[in-house]
Image 1 (cartoon, helix red, strand yellow):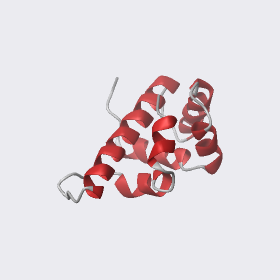
Image 2 (cartoon, helix red, strand yellow):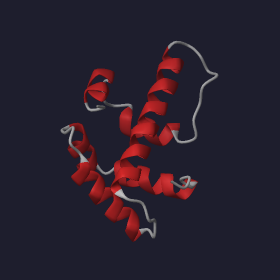
Image 3 (cartoon, one colour):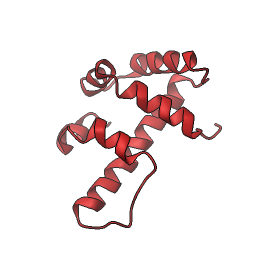
Image 4 (cartoon, one colour):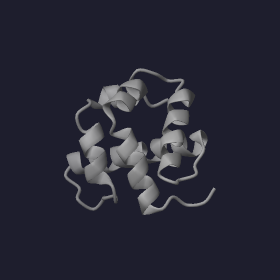
Length: 104
């Protein structure tokens, strides 16, 4: 699919930072319905993405965040990513085991 623009990713993160969405994502593995909601909300911003694209982007961002985070935890500063601060605000509070549990 086409690349996500910075604005699209920002909008996705803004929706993802909604406590309600976070709780749903943390509590479930089958999350198609949640990402259908996310896609519908993106559409209100004029962003046309289907739920699969949203879920894939979410997974990729989460994965990238985790690898940057663990690099930082081990003292490396070479790794960074564009939306680290925003994601840290969402993901930084939950423990790593919680994060990996809701991953698959």
